[in-house]
Image (cartoon, rainbow, N blue to C red; front, side, top):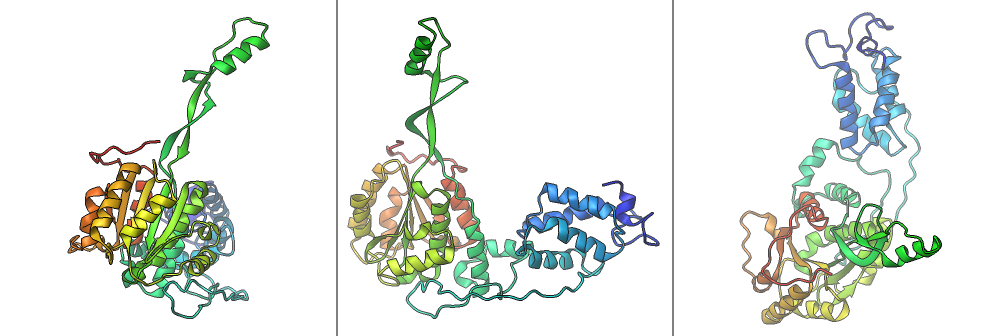
Length: 401
């Protein structure tokens, strides 16, 4: 951008300082405009560094005292597609407030697409999904939603949280595999490659070839409780599981638990979250039933090998079966898994105490006991699976393979 005078309108087409001018020690115009770009990024608009610089150069060539110039310069440079336009209009109106309102524009024809949404708990009619709903939340609204209990949200707020969960980073803690890769900067000597190099040179000495072990994402096995006591949280937990499967399809297994154990990994591999939830609804036969955690953990140990994996159990711990059986199976699971993470939505309540028989039987064999009631809790859980938080000393031997 040429200079601040061009942005403020001094020397431009206007006649005096405009809303972006800083005659009395206020914020500099460049800081105001870059702050607007940061607001757009927080709201989900693809206003990256390159687009922001283009925006600044465009405003520098226009009369910035005219709100229409700033509006259209930002819309043409900071928005990446049609989905960004409603968010841009909301952010522009909120950020510049009374300085200059966003100009009215002709609304495009909206095509509504109706598709069935997962009838998560066995009831409810399909609802329309498309462009006709409320616009995405602003950055301040998202910050409020991050810490709100999912069970106390409205349908619109829950849809916004589900949209953010679909964008959640599902990185995974790395582990060393048995396979190797060539390394130009040290490591163990690769005897085979070194000998082949010598033979290619007719037996003359050659440079030593080296290798290191490959890093692979650590496997995650997640069990999601879909019983009646978890009805308010099961759908959101399944959407979190969908984000994990999408991030690492080959290193994630997901099961639903209720009165039986059901593998739903294939259903969650759909790119579209709505289709994935539809597939889960069709695959899970025991929505809103009881819970037999002990029997289902035993079935998991028979069906899937958890050695070296991170096992995540999302449940409130209401056990209709034997607590002694659950304790015995959790002890077996903790000896095989790398770590066992228990996600309880009620733990987000400061007054919560783990008093149910199922939780009391499982807790001695759990590595991490975390909350699962809000978007912020799911972000913390994703960071835990990515290895951004240290592994707690458990006092037990866990496989690291």
